Image 1 (cartoon, one colour):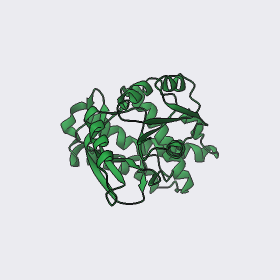
Image 2 (cartoon, rainbow, N blue to C red):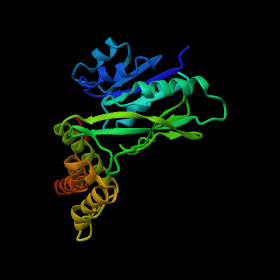
Image 3 (cartoon, rainbow, N blue to C red):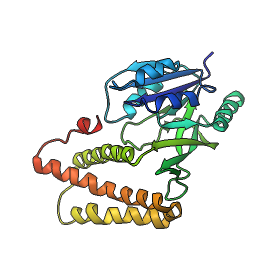
Image 4 (cartoon, rainbow, N blue to C red):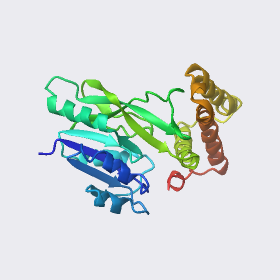
Amino acid sequence: MIKISVAIATFNEEDNIKDCLQSVAQLADEVIVVDGSSRDKTRQIAREQGARVIKTRPEPMFHINKNKAIKACSGDWILVLDADERVSPLLTEEIKGLVKKWQSGEAVGYWLKRKNFFLGRFLTKGGQYPDPVIRLFKKDKGWHPEVSVHEQIKIDGQVGWLKNDLLHLASPSFTRYLTRENRYSTLEAANLQKAAVKINLISFPNFLLLKPLGTFFSLYFRHRGFQDGFPGFVFAFFSGMHHFLAFVKYWECRRKNHQRSIKKDWI
């Protein structure tokens, strides 16, 4: 009887998927990997690790494929992971214990605290820890709204908390970080286009100056990102620049009078 399913959506994750799957080897009764037509060895490696792999089209809104993975799961409980996340032995034991002892009337979804790796260390400040994400839930009780790349899973019922950390290795190198930022700023530019944001003397200073500075000062000073040293400064700086980059892409799109290719940036 399948108790715990792990749902993962992937795209060109051959450097991550093996370690991710090995981190849930003692936890998962079933692993579903929905792959957006990776051009590397992601699917091959996932199958070698015992996962059930479903090939589909790449989606700029990654949560579409996450929902496909969730729907394919047959376990009583579903744990949703990204390929760059790792489940520690302590978190494994906590989840197994919760599932074994769970009783009707208790929470049907759970927040996990996430530790984010950036420039050689796990960030502890700058709003980066704890970085709470809802990832564990009873079957048919959780789903992605498919609205924002940073959205949380919606839970139909009570939500609780787990104690142990989920490890997030999204940026093992600065190059990887910039690749992800390029994708996310393009998605944000598309959102600005959908909202038909006006380009004028108000929006220019707002997106090119006020929002970047506001984000930087909030993360670096209010949330004490300076305590993470140079990595904390870099993270706060580029978090602010996200607004700048998204607006420039939006301006470029409007100036050329065409839809910016999200798919091209994503792939």
